[in-house]
Length: 256
Image (cartoon, rainbow, N blue to C red; front, side, top):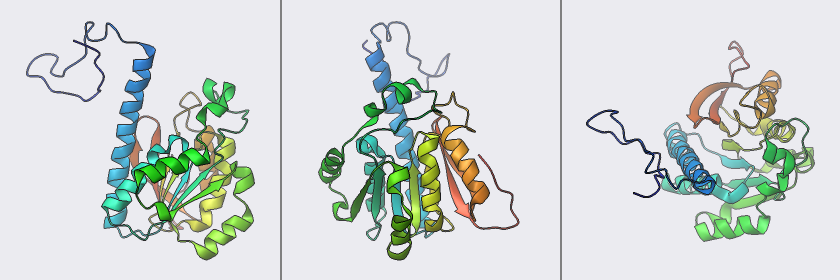
């Protein structure tokens, strides 16, 4: 029968009413197949988010730039390029913020990969460029900003963005770590507008799923000092969530 790979739920006309892989189907299942299985399912969920979100941005007439903080393997970045093209967002600019050298050192994370081999999450700037060039969408509208965020996201760069670039329509924040997320939120504050969507990729990842740690902690702290408030928007798999920025002085703040 071979390995059962896809998680697509298929209905059946009898018990248990859905198709479930059995022992025969999983007889040769191994760790490599598990990794592929998980990645397939996760990337499907992420791409669904981008399909829905670019539809929402277009329909709500939220115009501006795409920012991505953490661009390893260029998966979500290419999803954004594709859906922007599908929706005719020819004026959108795309900014990739990454160290292009993996994660910085951390003292807060609990996920073993982040602690023991942070360089494993490295996609070089050259490889990033190769992948987006091969993708062939809006290649002349893509800019990279290289460096760990506490070094690269300077006040001078922030001022340059405020003076010269569009407000943010969508920002993907895939920082993994509390230490990385804090300077990101501070950097984007003056670049937000009502209707800006923030996709926080690792809200429930890396800290035993506790969202008041890691990136979630950074987001909660940011909400206390930001002039914006945030509605919950979409759930992305088990790990992420998106939010829509708005301004309302009478509304409560500090949601997850």
